[in-house]
Image (cartoon, rainbow, N blue to C red; front, top):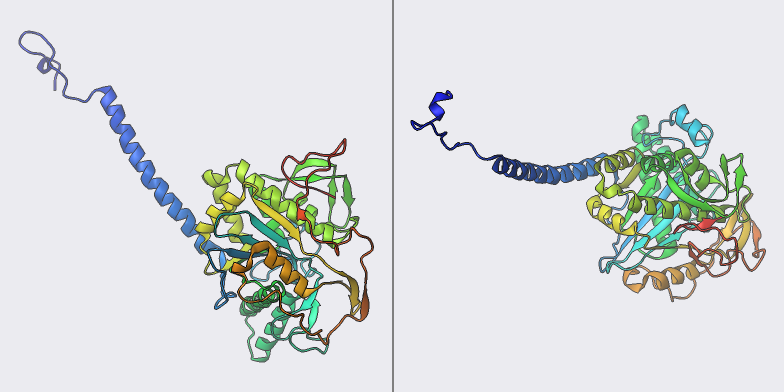
Length: 431
């Protein structure tokens, strides 16, 4: 409309029919708000769908007994494997960063095993570290192949996965299967089932879910979080793992984090001290999850999801959205760590082992997490008859009262009260 038509005969401008600037702004904000709401809902669904569909799923827990009253027991397994989920060697660049040697080293031992108990009433979560050299009865077919032993023999608990995997692959090969990917896939499923069943029988509680992580997973997780805070009581330098850190609280990148959790040389209790390192790493990672706002930052969350898709395998029936919500609460530090006790040390077929009291372990777990989630075992039952398979030499007693045979103490321990103690800032300081 021309300027002449906008005026009346008296020369006064007609009132504008266009909405005022304030009304236009309000309408724009309303439309934008509605759009963001829809996008946020769609984005949350997309992120969950992406996470659920991208992480490799396993049927290893099909038909397994579940905990009661809303309690959840999660087995965290860290494999000492230099291979990816398809059995292919990790890239040389990654292996160099991991300071972990060639892809032929390590096999498929479950060197990290932590049972995370999340009570259904929202109470304090508890995490139990299982030393990898505990001498227990292994589950799964074909355990002990090559040593003249049948199923159900005793060995280091970490070996259940690799022995069952190897036995399954040998059986498939005899049946004419030559597809390498299928051999790897079905072998790993057999390994998972054997490892989970072994832990379940040893602890006497159901396993509701599990998460499996390879060596590269520690590296990628730390990088996805922008580093993980840890605390050392004294400086360390270990050429085997690559650990070279000063004393005190510090933030480790991916390469450093892997060196931190793998170090056992130069530590007074060897593997048992390494178990405390793993607990400290998890404590630092959960604190970082909480402080960094990972669950409310889409960019950080996407990076974490990408990491999970690359390195993590879980049971197919796990509602991961519910777990993410639980993890957000757990990241507030409401987790108490305990390392399961050993009674002494011995030798079995030339290997060092931890001698454990199976029934004592079951009673300890039942006392810590309550009988309501322990439906498969009666901890107070008489001790089982000794196994016919025993260590080749008698177990030696613990070297001192402070050895692992003493009652387990909660980890992380509080800082030493004496003058000059290092403050971990809410995370445990370890050797």
